[in-house]
Image 1 (cartoon, rainbow, N blue to C red):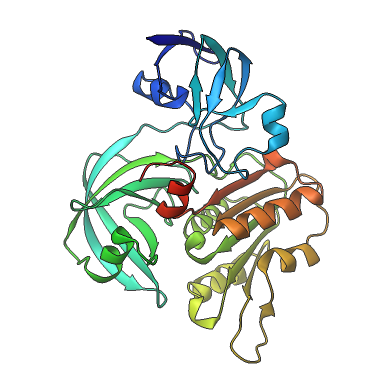
Image 2 (image 1 turned 135 degrees about the vertical axis):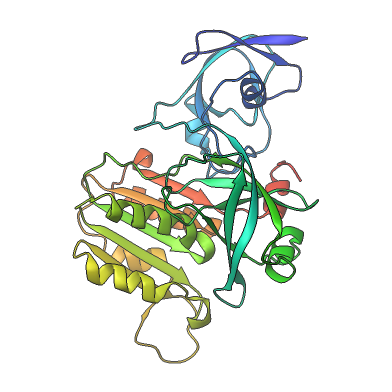
Length: 342
């Protein structure tokens, strides 16, 4: 049997089959429901339940806190109705919805950025045009391997897609991309997805924090903001373990030299020997230099512990939760422990 779920922003009810999530049903029926990971990790599909009985499959507390759930908030990607219901996604500032494209691409260039991060540049052969907002990601498939999510590091107006792929231990797709992928290979891309994108009409200060390959979406955000003439203070902190994990440093320092409103700070958490760089956990370094947070928007991307620690620090200092746009890079194993798709 199917339950009828009314979505406040949609002019028709959605039929949700028994055992199906609200997000699955809405997307299948052409509703542009805001979402990201689809596995209870990111919080992009956070919604309010106004009526009805819903069961939530396992999810990350980062995506939905106990207090939020107690107040009636849900995650549409984990919400299975057991009665007719009424929900509504949370209103977001500058909600942007791009058409989902299915692209066929060719590997144009490969670059070994660090010992475990490879930069992949893709030429779009068919399926375009591909529009996205800086900070979004796509589902990428190499041959017959399972599709994986990677953020675009390029600006939307640039013709090639740039991905930063870190080799994850036990990861088949990342291992293939890091060792076997060749220039000229065909790659399929679906997207864009995600709600942690640049708010282009925002005029307050911008704080960007990246960890590891989280530099990809943050690079797209920062470079786009500067290219579009955004004049407010823009600060980027890039946290890695050691010197060998740093990349794109020269390009970002050049960008800072050309734009007085932009500052770039690399941070090492486990330096090998003495260093003149900032050291410690990146969120702690940011906290020491945070200053006035009035009107600030923060963009975070990278390992979940870093994203969660930075989010908690910012909210403790008065940054509104809705002004923190975070993309935690969960591995497939981590998603699976929360009941996500394999």
